[in-house]
Length: 396
Image (cartoon, rainbow, N blue to C red; front, side):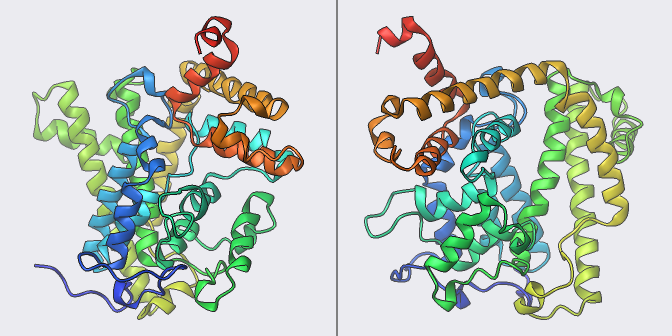
């Protein structure tokens, strides 16, 4: 039975609409239509070979940005259902949230931030916004995906208000967009919170990556389940799984423990969120946007446990020498390509060399950045080889 929608949920029939008017779909509501556009986007397909910790060629079982986005969408949809929110909007924001990530995970983002420092910087959240509003070209009547206001707002503000970031060069693109499309209905209200659906997508991201980093780290041999027994949150879950299944093998113990940990975190979010909604007297979507704090949140106790888990993962996984070597190689690949494309823009593919306006160095740098940010791990590695290996270059 579908629960009655809460008064503070978003309703697609009350959407502020799209920047470019389009006829209403006969088969989908506004947010479901947004979801479908994201799924069919080129940037979404590329997530299959963009990674977070491990590079795509290191193994078939590690999460990619695509599988991560699907896991986030599932958790976001479940949270939204339990909180009586719009499940389509929560799922849509979740599916879109990583579209702007460059290849090689955080190492790739760090390198593009460094390379773009003289020309406005780089931020993956802003890049996601640019993908859905400008870089995707799939429709003859507009650039981008022409998503509904609530979806675009969720993409920009799912982690909270961003008006304080508009002085950062990388975020100027969002401020400019709001000014360029100055219709009152398209003010993204950057100083307010996003919908509860977008907040559900944001915390689903935290739940997903904390759990799959544990899963992937064990599979990669960076640490064992025994190393986790004294770590809050995962330790008690491991103990409970072993108690319930004394003869369980290591593989099934890992899977069962991760499954249980997701459940514990989801239950915590639901309890904390319902308490905050009641305590803050939230009755409408406007109450949500003008709230004094994030409403979809972990409890203080869960945040403390997650802090200890993240410290463990940072020490044993994110800064493991094997991961450090991959990060180092990834940064060198992107740095060398960026430098070459800036010095010799005619080495860019034709569809990009025309955008690299050599008369305007800032526009040239942004075009180079967009090209590199759109690459998958595998494509970046192959492109680098073609550019810097004489044997491969001669075969072109």
